[in-house]
Image (cartoon, rainbow, N blue to C red; front, side, top):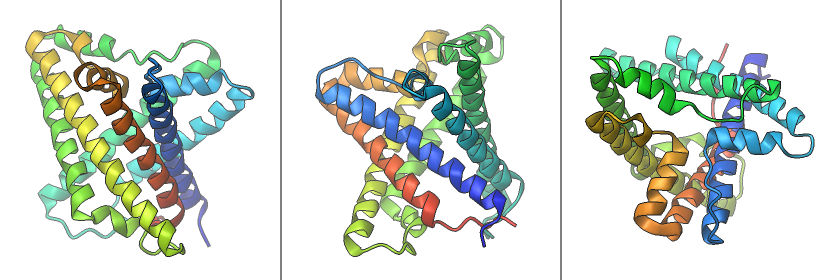
Amino acid sequence: MSSKKEKFARTGIATKGVIYLFIGGITAYAAFNSRQNITGSDGVLTYIAKQSFGQILLGLLTIGILGYVFWRLYLAFNDPEGNTDSSEKSAVKRLGYFLSAMSYAVLAYTAIEILLGSSDGGSGSSNWLSALLDQSWGVYVVYAIALALAGKGIYELYRAYSGKYKKRIQNAELDQKAQSFLTKAGKVGFTARGIVFGILAFLFAKAAYQSNAAMAGGTKKAFSFLQEQGGLVLLGIIAAGLALYGIYLLASSRYRNIPIQ
């Protein structure tokens, strides 16, 4: 029988899938219809809050985001999956889990601010980045962030083409067509993620080089860059890939092994 902690973690993974499905779906729809509705995670939260029963939905999503934060912190401070990695590789993974937890904790905080009416969903990334670049050592930190994002992008592409992601759904009780669709969705989704992280790495490096915080940002900034450099069709393809990643996560939340005591 699943524990409450495991259910909370699964809810968190599913919530992340919902967010990616909204981000990718809304942006892809806008791109293929020649509209300008590019959005990121913060924008999705604002969009949801404005719908009928939006406050209730956003409240449920906030709980789900906290579930994902819990899962990433659990991975960061424990080794529930029994990895046999070297101590150095394990440390890098744990750091990645912790940073992922912190980024979604910020998203949960933003959602709470929207619920309380004290935020319009603006990410504020340029504010903290600007404050960082004002420090004498800040530019080096931003370069380090760019390097970490580049590493994440490469890792996402590796996951896509090594097939490592498949184990999350291999034991799923699905028919062959559904299994095949999810496998393809995962590959396209991780590829799209790799591209987006690569763009974010470039934007952060550019922000550090020019000491201009406005150059960098989150997913919305990456989408804007894609639109400017590749046009709406390319933007739509990448956004659709992220929506497929969301579908893969929803399936993964149901079928993957979550070894929580």
